[in-house]
Amino acid sequence: MGDHTVDDYDAIVVGAGFSGLYMLHRLRQLGLRCRVYEAGSGVGGAWYWNRYPGARCDSESYFYCYSFSEELLQEWTWSQRFPEQQEILRYLDHVADRFDLRPDIQLDTKVTAAIYDGGSRRWTVETSRGDRVTARYVVTAIGGLSAANVPDIPGLDDFEGRWYHTGQWPHEGVDLEGLRVGVIGTGSTGTQLIPVVAEQAGHLVVFQRTPNFSMPARNRPLDEATVAEIKATYDEIWRRAKSSPGAMPLPGPSIAFDEVDEDEARRRYEAAWENGGVLVLQQFNDLMTNPASNEFAAEFFRDKIATIVRDPETARKLMPTTYPIAAKRPVLDTNYYETFNRSNVELVDVRATPISAITPRGIRVGDAEYELDVIIFATGFDAVTGAFAAIDIRGRDGVELVDKWRDGPTAYLGLAVAGFPNLFTINGPCNPALLTNVPVSIEHDVEWISDCIAYVEAEHVEAIEPTEEAEHAWVRHVGDAVAGTLYLDADSWWMGANIEGKPRRFMLYVGGHDDFRRRCAEVAEQGYAGFAMTVPNRTA
Ligand code: NA7
Image (cartoon, rainbow, N blue to C red):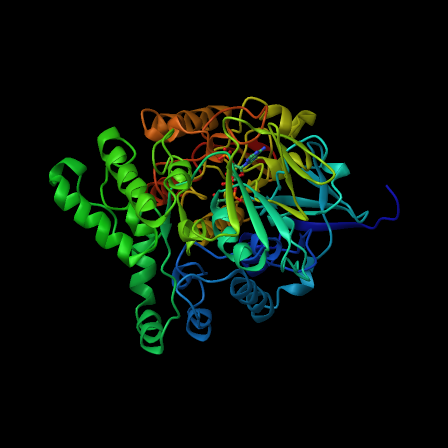
């Protein structure tokens, strides 16, 4: 390596988004000497990078935030039901300042390697800036959706226009006024982006491989009375969120589809659709286990598309028919389907005939060439494992994490990995986060990890890692939880199916946040059952 300093820390945290900021705060409270490395030029993680037009959260603002500080809850006021990227980033900047976190965060620095030395029981961490430091603990706070996926389509280098990935959007913005714009991808990102870009572009071509089920957000400003009511009831809000499967303080479905007749089922869907937000798909508790329940919901959505979109052929193309509803991440939108009624918007189905090349002038699909000034890749991420693979992580006996995960990722509780002592993974694979309201999942994991570190420090444990048996049992449980559900019937990023060559395995725990929280608490109460600990002169 070039110029480097050697320094020694108690803990290195990788990433300064929602999880890294809180992890730092907790570890400092334990009196540990910490360093956070962050690739961006600012804090904020996903909300630092995803600055594309229309970027917004699908969780409601009042529960898409930290719960750990009553003062923070009372002093911060959200302006909208669903917060925009800029507002969430302002919030995270505020958190970094309020808890004086910045002195321990090194920006513009990617962690390139983390190598465990079994002799000294320390990690050596290297960065893109030439740092080479050692630490007892490494905590990954790298986010499950941070490794941008730009599909390998021949010809991109020769494109004469400009192109962007939504997850690496230029800070100065992109002036699309009057231009011919192509958007590839219709996941949550494309669905948020397309209506906003359509208002700016001269002509917009949407390249759709798989249509998504999208429901109206019905975003609105939050008035003073609503804000006051929220702030007065936060204890109850968090109690409900932490005891719910989705980590949200919203009523969950308590009945099965068969318990009501079809008119009543339709009435419920209709009412939820009018109200907007994620509750539309929280009507029946068997949505993901009963094909009839699922198909009813899917048909309700397709009817909505037929009602909103004027051109029947375009409406037909926008209707998902090849996978169960909610087996890919459900999406919230503002005027998504309405956008296809605009005269400057064109929808190209690239399922039957894929994009064959990017030409100097645009995108080729079969015999047609679409001439474009700008291409926007809303093509998602190498989710869950991609950000790990970008770091050379080697555990005991030189085992490489990418090798261990060659057939799919494994981790005990999604928090720690056998063979990788003193490494903790916030919202790692086999964890329910990313199916949940993420900040609540993050807080849980951060608190569990810091409690675990406090325990091992107090007990003079030098190394802690899950046993192979405990990890296998957890991974089996994760597999059992998803077996027989409709989640397995779609090519989702949850399945690793969006990245060519990636092992096809459901990477998250569908058992729910409440169940997971209970299990993690039990493991801790039993003195970290399932973990092996190395104590000088004693091995437990
Ligand atoms: P997603 O949900 O992975 O969506 C990516 C979209 O890009 C999806 O429609 C893909 O089609 C499409 N895609 C990917 N590669 C190609 C190629 N080669 N050709 C055509 N279309 C392609 O990513 P998002 O950024 O929207 O959302 C990620 C998460 O962020 C989201 O779930 C929230 O949790 C927040 P496909 O469906 O694979 O056929």
